Length: 86
Image 1 (cartoon, helix red, strand yellow):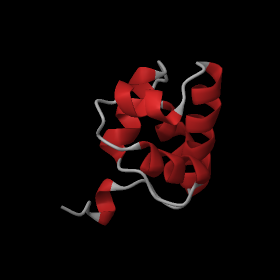
Image 2 (spheres, rainbow, N blue to C red):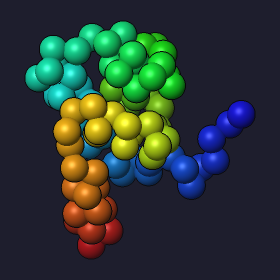
Image 3 (cartoon, helix red, strand yellow):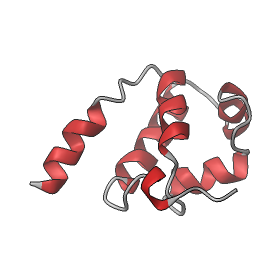
Image 4 (spheres, rainbow, N blue to C red):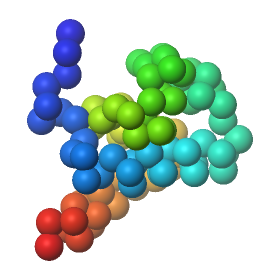
């Protein structure tokens, strides 16, 4: 089943999210496989790699699960969106 466009992060957020994933994954010493396991294998390591490289727009639900794994408050995205829009 395909994810609807409104359920994916925007292109403007993609570089920020990509950096957030990579930075936190390295900080917590997680491999892509570890991260996949931590989010209950919702996405495989190849897909997570594409998110991290900015090749795919990540669905919000997966992003919020990754934020939970790394203890990142997902409220930061509201602030980032405000900066991008204005």
